[in-house]
Amino acid sequence: MPENCTHDCSTCGENCADRDPKSFLEKPNKGTHVGKVIGVVSGKGGVGKSMITSLLAVGAAAAGKKAGVLDADITGPSIPRIFGVEGSEVLGNDEGLVPVTTAGGINVMSVNLLLADREDPVIWRGPVIAGAVKQFWTDVIWGDLDYLFVDMPPGTGDVPLTVFQSLPVDGIVIVTSPQDLVSMIVGKAVRMAEAMNIPVVGLVENMSYVECPDCGRKIMLFGESGASSIAEKYGIPKTVSLPVRPELARLCDEGRIEMADPGTAADIYGLIGG
Image (cartoon, rainbow, N blue to C red):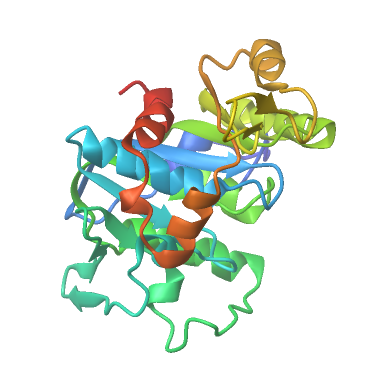
């Protein structure tokens, strides 16, 4: 704490240990009215975090809620492709940028919608990336949403910290896979959320098993599921174990995630209370 601390975090730029994390909150665009902001995180890449984010939004929309997806994975954006809106033009006006709307009525914003070529790499340093994420909150006219889902890059670096501090995050969903190493990494995500006073509302164990098409037997490709024990260890209230489903990967590749099995989307959406 600085010697001249006034204990008024709203007028201070110091990032000291005694500072309330919520004092960094940014004001949303004046055309944005969001009921709940839900972050989707993972300790490592390759566990299907963007797919789960998309299924949360699809499940919310199927339940009659208005949903949006903020793609905060600036260097690895995949949300536009998953929803089939690659190449869509992002329009703007004096009030800000207007997100692209999917066929199912979900609002989407991603850096890949702003690039001239979707394959152009985003070679930015951390502070610039963090600034872009903030602008997706302050400069985008999200409209009236029941839920805004934030797809974050893996790990506990600049972007998750920026989202946790700058956006009014109501809770996070952690995506993992069955391996012990990944289970250990879940603990890092949980402890980061605790440090930011943000509750973990659910855990998705993706690629938990393969279901035999002939007999229906569950085959544990990566060992026994650890979802229940992880949830118990860290006090996570809800879990979903999702099997390996090639059709989901195909729908993501084809930009048709909104055609996913309604039951699967409903199960994932159930993590945040319905």
